[in-house]
Image (cartoon, rainbow, N blue to C red):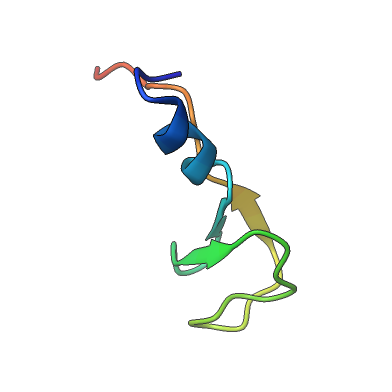
Length: 50
């Protein structure tokens, strides 16, 4: 997690569409941009560059 707990809490409320990579609110049934139903939570850990 990062330095700022408030920012971390906000990131946990975001879901990402697997089809169009659009940001959505937590708990939605389908993507607001494309209507796709399969979503994932936004990554909260920091990924290392290769």
